[in-house]
Length: 75
Image (cartoon, rainbow, N blue to C red):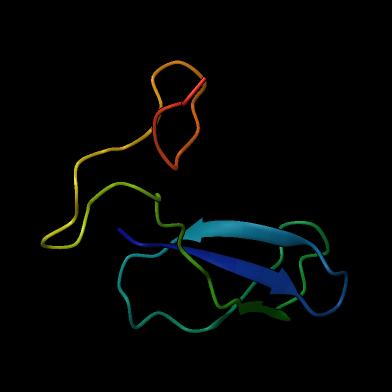
């Protein structure tokens, strides 16, 4: 089941709710003020950097001694 984020237009409370289908109504009841003024928010997802490399990407050059992402230390 998808999880959607909502914000109540009456009290400003933000919350998440499970939905049985993706076509459920965009307006739901706020669990705080109990008014039917909560609307679905546009949710953003987070992408993990470095999770995958594009084709032809070079091997990891991060310095094993200092952690510099530009390559090994010269010192």
